[in-house]
Image (cartoon, rainbow, N blue to C red; front, side):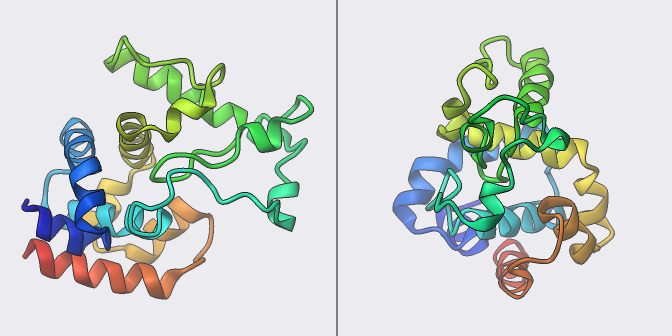
Length: 181
């Protein structure tokens, strides 16, 4: 994939592509995001989630939704301050203490140098780990199969929990499919 194709697929500027493309391509290779259908779906989703690779961490208001992260047992946010400490990071926003812990446990099996994200959540907001946590989530959530089947709405629900920004995601998907054709 060329930097121009990667830019079109994610909506990222060429400087952002230069900074992050290597890590994202490596993560895609590790997690079998290796066909045009899978790559177009993955790159369009991370493009939306990150505003074209601009935001590697959740923009914090806090918004009413973000204030509800605090004390959410389903996210493992059981300690005071967990809501903000384990806010979304990475190209697919990893959110909640339990998700940081699980991502670390799964990634350390393949990458012995993986930092403990529960102890140091900011590490998810670095180029390498943002890419690997996104691809690892994608793979374990069955998103390759959904991309193979063209089930983009379902794939969006898996990533987002709903259809927030769906029109933008669809537009990015069309751009990504065109770029990778």
